[in-house]
Amino acid sequence: MSRIIFDNGTHRCIVFDDILNEGEVDMEDVQSNQFLIVNGDQGLLFDPGGAKVFQPLHKEISKFIFPRKVKKIVISHQDPDTGAGINYWMIFSNAVAYVPQLWVRFIPHFCRQSLEKDFFTPIPEEGMRINLNDSEFILLPAHFLHSAGNVHMYDTTSKILFSGDMGTSIFPFTAEFEPVEDFDEHVRFMEGFHRRYIASNKVCKLWANMVRDLDIEMIIPQHGRKYFKGKEMVNRFIDWVDNLQCGIDLFDRNIYTIPSE
Image (cartoon, rainbow, N blue to C red; front, side, top):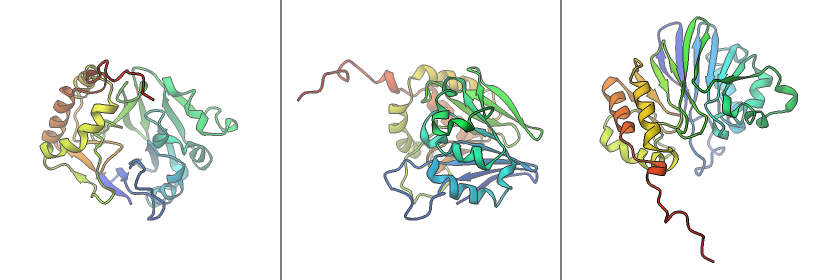
């Protein structure tokens, strides 16, 4: 249920890729990963997921840190799989939630109005840097990948880029969580999602040019049980994104037709 992907003794990154018990998961549901970073005695959650996963996630987190020591929550965009369970975290943690500026007035619809005050901090359109117990995280602009307002998160200690929907791959629920070994073979599990959900090659190129300036050891997406580890595989993925034709690049006037009776 939980996988430690980085641990230097004081800084740990944990992925929860299969948090629901058998019988709780619908095979038609979109598989989603949740992420916990623990630095010293404080924690940060990235895309903590919907209401369905709150209870098992809270239980798993307690194996690594007292849940009320979770001080920061980052929600990458407005989709329910990223943060629809935020209502519970407002009650059962002492955290502050960072939400893209474009969605900061929408995310509170997931929670009771009485709990909203002073909880949500807008992330500027150009991104920002935040600190957890002297460890720095960069919240990177990732607009239209796929959300109109979107952020990715780079952990400067582990050198992991948490890439949200970028890098999503569609595998059976029984697949193992592990690094990609054969990139060319892996493309077929990514391309359908990216072609339909990512807006255009223009934003792909902007993103690729931005993240090439980071020292990245791993790229881990929100969906799928495969991730990119090591400079060679990281660069293969960035190059693939740079050249990806997707979204409106692939649309033509034949899509926009009035449905027949």
